[in-house]
Image (spheres, one colour):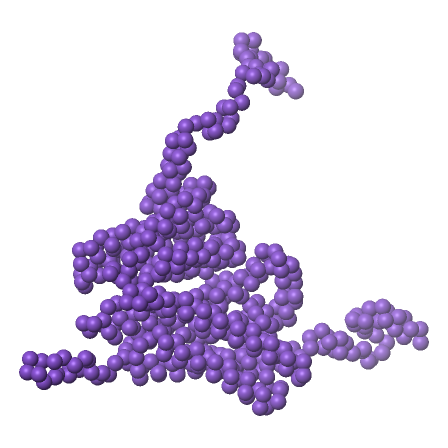
Length: 217
Length: 298
């Protein structure tokens, strides 16, 4: 090798480091440190994760944070609060009123499961719980719309209040659908995107309809 | 005649080989072999309207090979692209006379996406439209208080899904039974029948939306129109399957299919959509003079 004859290793490059594996210098608790931390830290970490996902829904960008660390706390809280707010609707008889608590729950969770199964059967690459997580978190704009509707209904139930409610619910429905589509559409094969987006549209449309038709006692 | 012996041996070893004998002017006919490979292709083409029916039959045989407890088995029922679903919907709304929906569009690739989501859309469309129509009809009356009528969604769901799955099951069972007695050229698998029924329900979705219009005449015209369209799809699909049978049974089968379809449409109209009122007198209001005044709603 003629070229290597000119190469010389400088004598003053320090070589240092430890070769021996230190035994006992690291306490074994450092690797499982979450066990010893205060409960407040554990709860705050989970709350921060949930809050970060809420922010992701509010400003939907194509980020994978929502998908990577999925959790179902947010969807549960949203679903329960939405179902609770949909109670207290008027009914002349029990049969003609708004949806019961259990019905809202079933529609949201069963609907999300069916949409997830649908997207997986069509060849999607997203995992089951990731999809549930996204669909559940994207109910958040509609929960906000429900809150606004209840406040508007406190002020009055005339035509003006209906138009305000219609506009708010319509905008939030569009937001929910666009947010969840932004997260979910990428995991589908390109020639089947519309087949996956349509059930999501139907799902949020049904929830919006339940919110819009809520009439207080 | 040793050449004949050689040729006969070769032909026995490979019956499909074409042999050309240079010495003899007569060549061994090979059209019989090729005809065996493609039985009745010409008449199938007219029924199918396509050239690659053989290819799809071969491919269909290779497709559903996964055992039924794996996820891949059910994925074979969702092996459709967007344009295929749209084509099938288009075929159910604009039936081409003489062309069979199953053979033309489904072609051994029945999917469950269309039937399931069309039924889901229909359930919610009927419930929402019925609610809206009742709201508009009773709007302005002092005694009317709007209710969302959410219970009707579950009733609509039960009815429509039962129709879309139990009627095909019964029809398939009936056709299988008749097939064992009379040899039919055309026979459908259970999923193909479910597919036809599911896609034929699509026309009811815009019909349900238009039923909001509170005019009885308009509603009944819509019923007849949509019944004609979807009924013709069903008739053109199932007539070839029963026409070889006893005449009366064939006609009775097709008539029953149409009757059930009509019953679904009329039943939904009657149950979910209140009749628009024409001059039904409002409650009698006693005036100060003691005479009663009957007010009429418009």
